Length: 109
Image 1 (cartoon, rainbow, N blue to C red):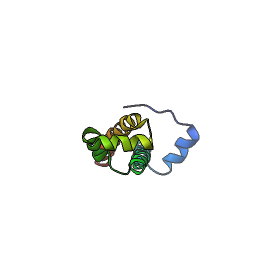
Image 2 (image 1 turned 90 degrees about the vertical axis):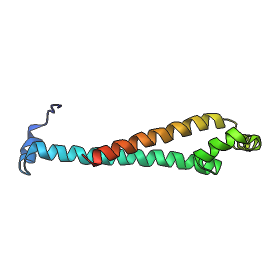
Image 3 (image 1 turned 60 degrees about the vertical axis):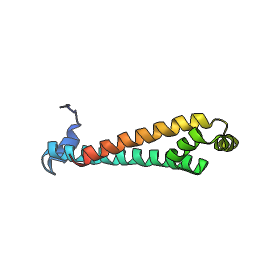
Image 4 (image 1 turned 135 degrees about the vertical axis):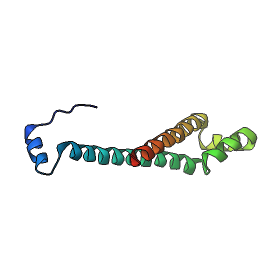
């Protein structure tokens, strides 16, 4: 448990609305949900940009890179730093999954 220090005037007002502990837990819960949802949206937007840039999902991109030399030649015309994009894209997908798990955990709390 973490202890917070609040301004007296805020405490005085919060007391008018009920139990401060319950109110703060509700506020923090809502804030964490909101921030987590915004993080997920930002990560999904980043993934969408890569999908638009390369014209396919990461799974198809990865499979084509591994099996199709002409695909590699094609993506090099899109961006010669495609390997960097691939690494960032994969990391972003993994980060998205981690944040989605966090959201599921706090939504069920």
